[in-house]
Length: 208
Length: 241
Image 1 (cartoon, each protein chain N blue to C red):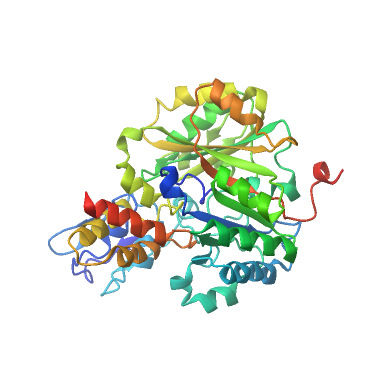
Image 2: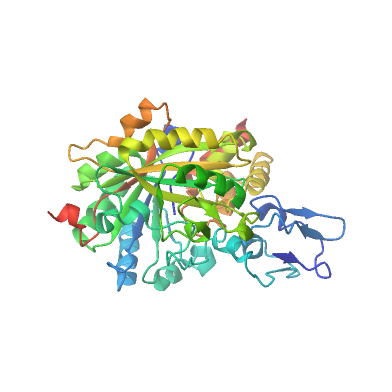
């Protein structure tokens, strides 16, 4: 499962796109992990996460609200928090370290920025996962601006046709970029689609 | 997934939610290309069909494979978690799956956008199997192989289409150049795309041993990716010493 990896974009666009992923490990520390995962989400929200999500049961829309999402977190869930601000994410990492909940935390984002955040939070990064891009019939893929939006949902639920439809509505001023981004967020069941970044991308597409 | 032609009013609300463009809107009703449909559930979940014309037909083997590897909310029995992969490097500080000197490889076939048939997944797996790799046993894609030594898949899944399937294994870092060479070659023989990732322990001096090998092989890697910050407990034996 590499759903927070492979996000396409230039460093400027990616500089407001960070995801914290919280996960127990099967048969090692998963028993009783549900309340700890919930606590990690609460720490993230307190420190300014713009979105939280749950891979196992779906995003806040699917579950009927943030309260229900938090209430339903199970042992063995994989949950996330999206940040658009490095200082806020660093503060969350510091508090997560202090809370010492014993579950794994993975940060997705620009490596050099994440390294700095870890240093400030007193964390020593353990393992990295690099994306080496797309191989094979890349000639069949849509343009870069579509891919930047599509790859923010690693499971591909934010479809090319939906993006084209929303981008056209934004361009025609039927909806704002923010409203368009929110519509794009909804199919992303894990809740890792960064609607804040998406609004900027839709706005840029509309100006072309 | 199916659309009931008696109920459908061809409003078109479902069309944009199909990730592989398998829904077409006719004059009187919408239609799903059943051979292309990956059973991802996105149309049923998101289209808010005004006549409830979209429905999930009974899924039977081998079509069940499509749901496991395409619907994010389906739990894979092999991994016990939702999604198409495994814990991979995300819990590496407690599992020790990827040790110093080793690289974890994830080849996600069909991602992004295009989806994949298993005959293409098999081509890549067989190319990697020739290098003597051992495929990750907890991965749902591995469980569809008829021979994990050769990377051959069960014949009845070969034409199944999924949003993506992840081929996962580990290799000593010094053999990464062979992996890249094999992938460059097989990437010219498939109809789809794959997204490639390489996981690695960070060396005690802070360096990442796989980076120099990727550069030497002319393999591009992005400035963004995933970092496990080491907060899981108990630590694996390698880190407890």
